[in-house]
Length: 404
Image (cartoon, rainbow, N blue to C red; front, top):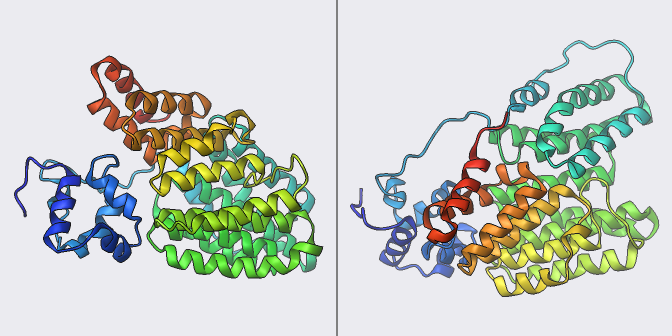
């Protein structure tokens, strides 16, 4: 192992990168990361995560991650769930109904149950706990219905089953086994394809793109999103408002995926989404499941600017966006986390702490289970000026304490 005990992980990355003769831009291109991500890791504005370390290590000639993190860093392989309901959701996902009888719930009942679960997700301050309570029963009911119904009712039940899997993915995204997330993606896509429903298929691609992007397969995510847009766009004119909502959602997801790789072309997709929302969605429209709306388009603008490493643009975009207009408690909490990331990029530690505190007050579980929020809070607790260090340490302790 390279003996560099005095160097931070970011300094180690920079030294190794220079040693193999790679620019930041070239390393970013090889790994699918943004050049801004490499820059902020190296200068200490962003912590080196295990995911990023695994992606850059082969290109830096690193075979032992201790060369990046240092000998004093312990990498835990403990796969315990970080939310108490994960085990119940796992059992519901892997309880195959080999034999099944009785009468299924009606598709009208199931639609109401799925819609209610999504409404809870977006309105509860502790959405993961409440989703964890309803998901096992929801998965069971929709799985049974998809097996027992026939004809058009079966297709409707399959589309609703896909939505139940999507909610499970949203719940599992920041905790639990990665394999469980992939299971929800694959099951959701299979149900949507069996339903032969363009909206269900496009929605499943939207959810698949998020996990593909998260594991460094951004190019695949963009390919799948392109296919979904080609499926939906010809149907927008005659297919009703749901098709316009889906098209906007797909462009927003594309914009964020491109921004995560440092591609300034993200703004073109963001602008297309904005035009779709402005022209095709009624004033005040809010999508039930992903909360597509005019305020959400502006939320994505802030996210794109942060991921492109442009805190000035992020703050400019956020200036006229009233967080209270964001039609989702969960998304509002995540918006405050994004603003905290913007402040963190500029080294404004007091502002970072203030915004993380606002995020926690808005949605405690959004902050508790956000890797970005955990990272910022941990660094503030270690590095913040003495005047705010105690407050930062209290915040870090609160959001790292195990849920009850």
